[in-house]
Length: 94
Image 1 (cartoon, rainbow, N blue to C red):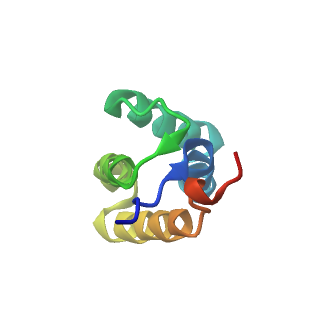
Image 2: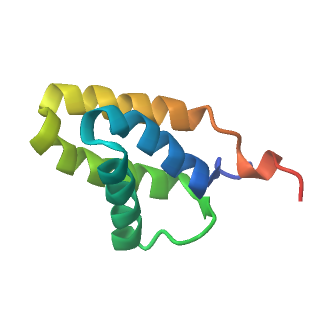
């Protein structure tokens, strides 16, 4: 059985900030991602797929207010796609 793909938390947050910054500004993008991580109890250096999904879901709920439903879906899909390209932490050297 293969282990699920795990992602580096800092890299995931960087992707989110980069994609959200044009819409919310760098500070608000950074703050939103960090606050949702705290709320979800994500405090490790590695994120499990479930944690990534939960974080993107929470961001989606809040972004609808600022961007509308259609644009939010596009932005979250872009985040999900970019996060999927990040290297799996099990591939990283110890």
